Length: 430
Image (cartoon, rainbow, N blue to C red; front, side, top):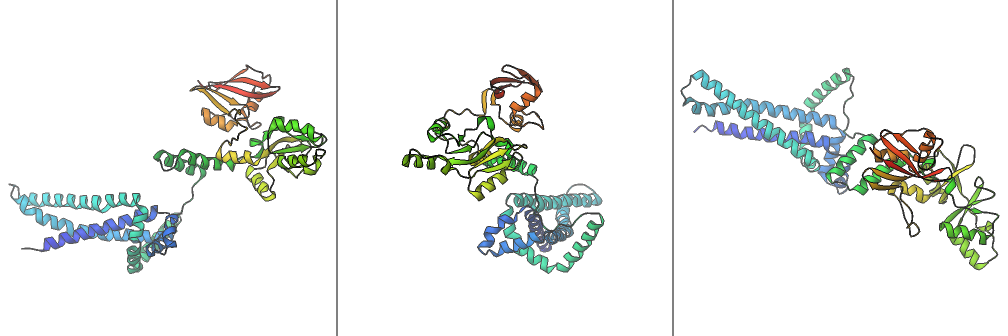
């Protein structure tokens, strides 16, 4: 019995397995992230240490994988086709065809079988496994791949060096590692895909998206406007300011010397009530604490850092003329990340967006244009104003309740006004 075909078949099986190894290695080391290896490195796993070395020298080890795939492919071509042809020749000879046709058919079938085995078992299946299980595959192939790289280092160095020269001549840069950076838009798309696939929930997606927007917000966009500020007058008695406390029910209040444009500090209600309980004739002056002053264009991330550093929970927003434009609290800043924070005194607070039906919304006049655009899928843009109320005022200077403004087939109706301030806007989608 001729054992040579059996030996050749076993050799082909080994070569296909080695092809699968190098293909898995190639795709896994490209897909794996270094952060996935850190927990394994911390516990001293040797394969993780080897994997870390591989992904930090990606160019060299990709060359090793390509060399391995090329060597095994040549070996498969050298052994598989002649072996399959020799095994198929007696079978095809039974048919009434010429010798030349038998040889041609045997070669063709042998080529198809070898190609099928090489592509499906040696490449496609390993590629899918490596992509889906990049971490496990990388840890599995790391140490053998390092040894293969060391064994054939002279050849890899020569091939890789030649490739580098060609790449540089074409104006490209060699790959040093695959730790790529992503733009904000790319990260948002990754988050959206992760949300659709169920990897993260809606709250997690909202928080991360809010973080991106948080970095772009300025004080003017989130402040409580001057017209809605509740504050104490320094000259008023504590009894007079009690009415303000009952109306506002806040923890801290800004203190004005003469008017809203001269805010000199803030008071903490806990200190005020404690002092009042001890001495009914106490004045408000001794409870005044410093308050921050920031410009309208100050990024809110800087405002938050300043509040944390100085341990002050409130800031006055000043306009370009030095007047008071509004105020910001720590709660206002945190709401930009986590959403509305409601306490026991916010039961009657109306949300900024009320959905009447699928095509009708009633929104606060303070709602940002960016939020309106996101809700409606349109592009309201005005460099002079930030809110839907401000946009309607600049669009129609004679704005009053009932006025309708049409834009991109949407109808914007002033639902409620307080003096010259637009409080509510009804939006009807087409």
